[in-house]
Image (cartoon, rainbow, N blue to C red; front, top):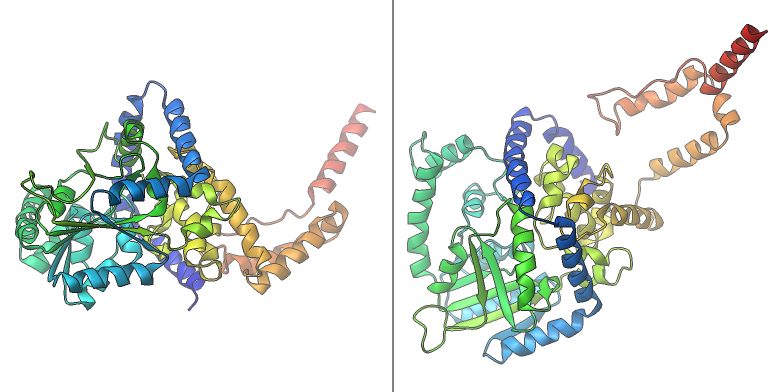
Length: 464
């Protein structure tokens, strides 16, 4: 089955799952309430967004310069920097690191980039246990699932769902409260941290002028994942670069406010190298893997390149009516929602994933809430055009659209068809494409032109 067919089938199923809709509605309503408070703290939110957007556009204009500066600065402190053109190269580096360090246990802070390259599977193939340490990531890992949302991995689960999952997997009481379940996970992870051979993080920002890795999180798991293991691996997309450390004062609050509604995330750490001789904790070795994996494909497209400005706040997902209806798993890709629909065709190929650019109502909410002003709807439209130009749309659609263009290009031609023929023509769409849960609107017996002429004639007679 093609990716497009899988998407349509999954969307048709989940869109009418009342439990799923109820859970997502509740969880996103909590997010919306928090974000309203977060935005209210800004004296001039639009100015902050404009500044962040300008910095990110400067990055894209000088991408190579900032990446090289970052590499030079962090390498000068003994950190090894590896450039990975794709998933295969990145996982090859990781396999070698695990083998060289005889790693049997790896602890991993939340990172969508590691999800992108399926790091957990790579570690397991080499006999190394990989443990997610973010609570949401831990929950979906225990469930044998992937993250549902780029910021809130377990958004699709209620507290009852999680209590039942933990009861089944760990034997915790079925009526455990969220606080009790969190405490249970904390105790499990404490043992993992102290025994781990390798710690892995992503990077929210790569800081060029100091050669630093900025990681922002709410649970302290990023710090714990790097405090005990002897090796710290950073896996970061090359678009995460920013020019200066001083700019974090702008980006930290924007990321927090749009991501969770906080004034600032609880833990914000900058890693600049391995443990020094005068430090009591931290890794003996630090390795940074800079991942392309299709990002330069986005960069080389004059219409889509601005999508690389994304800071992964998740605001566009939470505002998107399509995402809130079909959920994160329907996309079947690491990055879902509007930003995923824009990026994935470039990262994984238009042939298999061009349909995602059509999974949008083009309402514009995603572009409205974006903290770095990515014109998401414009890029989605451009991707749709590219899909058509590459002859990737179904043949039946081309025939139907061509026929509709011929019929509807002139009012007289369109009006010449009786309403019974028009309604017969649209009837199959009640079951194909439009869906069985609603009916296509029917054509009136008389066209607008006919009705207008009749009214005009009637009015003229009345005046006489």
